[in-house]
Length: 548
Image (cartoon, rainbow, N blue to C red; front, side):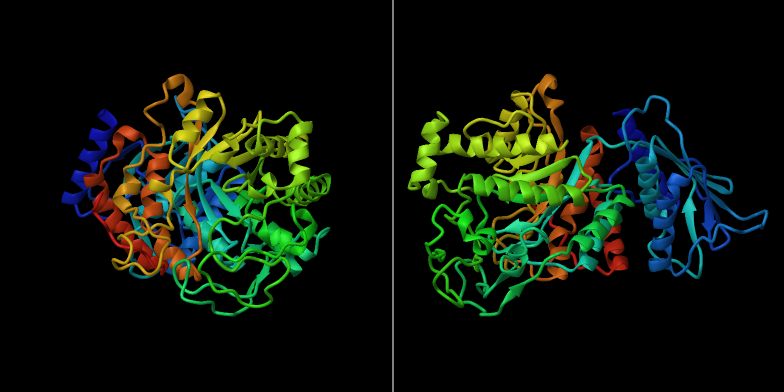
């Protein structure tokens, strides 16, 4: 309460002294204005000093930002005695133990940023960027005299992007990563495989991208659509492009988590290799009410949105295929986590598959849910043997949770609560608050076509990742939370931008800042300033919607 009051007083002082530019999201733990009315100028003569060479990525990010949006860089080589200095260093703050903690001070002729670790220094740079005026006059900017102490509430602060339904160029994937970095998020969940397209090169299985990466058409409008555009659509990321993205993210202290869907959402893989299906000779089923384009027999990549019956057969051939895929994926992603999906896996084909039914009997499984648990646990054992941990959507709880799995709870909070009560780590991602494909205004009320439902920026801001049903002994299993961006109705980068902003900004504060310090009325003026930054970044954005 005292910290919240001190911040509120500081902000009110700023409003009387013309420092409307102080508008930091996510809100720092502590912020004090040390010299109201005083400003420090940063210009090309400003020196950037890194006490450790490992801090160069933070200095480079700042310079890139200044060059792109203000037209100059801090050269760092000035010999002028009166030139200002930005000093970056590693120094564990007293009483601060969290990864990502930092302190920032602007005083006399110096900006000092000290982090508990390299990521902390980088987050300090993001705060410094938000101290800059949105617009500058000439090749300089001025920042107010402040001291800040800050650290993240949650260790996991993520955002997902689905590239299976619609593909986006590497240039935009990098921009998306920058958006996360500017909001102090630290995990990028890359949803790479889907019914509508397989998006990652696997060299041992070239048909995954030769066949599985392309569909013969796409429905027009909201499901079931008003026809089909009849246009071949698709593409994929080469392994070199994946490495490029992972390296780019690493310089921004963002970990990229790949998702390879199993056992459902596998139509694209099955189109490439029909023998992975329970019924290889059966034709791909068309979604009810939709229009199909191209050949009507055989296995094909899906052209509509939804959940489809084709599912991986639980055969040795399938497990060998998936193990081979995982081997190549692990070589590309240094993250300690691999997301294996596990959601929306219809059991109809397993129910009528003689092989699946025999396997249920042989393994002493209760039913098809038990078979899914067997499937996930078998893959988990293999992935664990490679030194990695699996993440799965909350359906992996059905039939019994894999021993070391992390649960990503999307169908509300029930799955997350259940997993935490079983002493499993949890990432909260309920559709009601963090799904950024939902409409910001309500279906058919101004937004272009979305999947429907409604999630306003105020609603996102109201989310509390620790469910009230968990006591302290179980709440510790909540690693953090994640925003999800499903792209059925997002064909362009501009539409993605519109859907994520301003809700991603609101969620960044939910993920980072202390819960007791969050207040919508206090947040609104800071968000209004952020709208000016959106314009500076030249990004599309949604509205300021005050509805709950």
